[in-house]
Image (cartoon, rainbow, N blue to C red; front, side):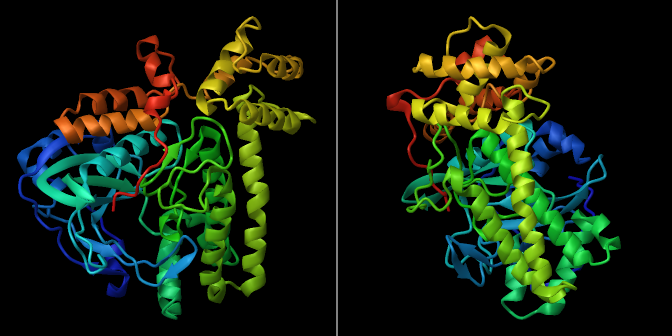
Length: 478
């Protein structure tokens, strides 16, 4: 089993991580390999699917060139600071440089206890592994920066999560696993030398242009602020709710990371919450921009000793978040209703549309997709129960569309037909967990891989849950 590892994080000081091998499992069995992603990483997918490959994916064998470790980090969890968290059930095997020249981590999730496990078993249940596989690959197909799923294996062992459940290991690929919480871990220990080393490493890996700036650390902070502003805007534009956006789940790379109690909103409402542990709506759909800025503020606090302008420089960097987010979000909203150019009154038009959706309890994804058809044919039935309210808005919208070229094509490339709806994900998980039937998982994964394509064969995947199918809570799985 050959994986072309080229490790760099392992060259950082030992206090950044704990070196250890994954814990072997009893009877690993392959669920699936992401063939296309493996090839992009320069890894033979057939070798990954072989017995030797499955042994690597399960943690039973450490491949040549790997330098296994659990990463150290801290984090604010629902606003409360925990000075040591770290990879309690994950093992970073190493890094590969893909065919695109980008360096990525390969990590096993559910690979056994580590020094950071805090009395946990270090394992993952099958359900959360399949959820992360489905949702992360759906996000990638939607064009949203994200970690990816390279493979999933069952372990032949059970884990206790309120009930006994089958165990599994996910192989996750990320631009890196450096988080806001990684910087907090060093800052909490007064380790300014470590902070400088980590920031220099993150600049070299993720923001190389910052190295030549007058203040490289300020340029780094500006870069992270910009990427996170764009990322949360893209979440909102597809109705995604992260569910547990703690600082340890906020990646410096600007990727979406950790798909625990995440969900895609159906009926549009800014206060929507699914996470069973978010009792006060801290991470509700509409709160996500504010929370990302809060997380970035924690990063800026860590970097103050490194910034040439100190605290004032940090404040300036954070001030740029609002305009960057608004430009990304409002520009995306305009595209969702067919507007590529910007004209006075556009923000009122999009804002009024969202108010109509909220008042009508309209399905976020389906209503925007049906608006694509209305852009092509004015005779298409109103996508709201309140047809009169829609008709009044549509008069203004059609007048504005007249100034655009091919608005329907813009809309179909922006508004997905398929998202990982909660009830479909849960049904696929239930089939696998209860009956060892992976056919629903495979079909859903296939549908989600082409989210912008109309396919009448899979129309049921475009529809919101019926009352008896609704999933009102999602769970972390740890």
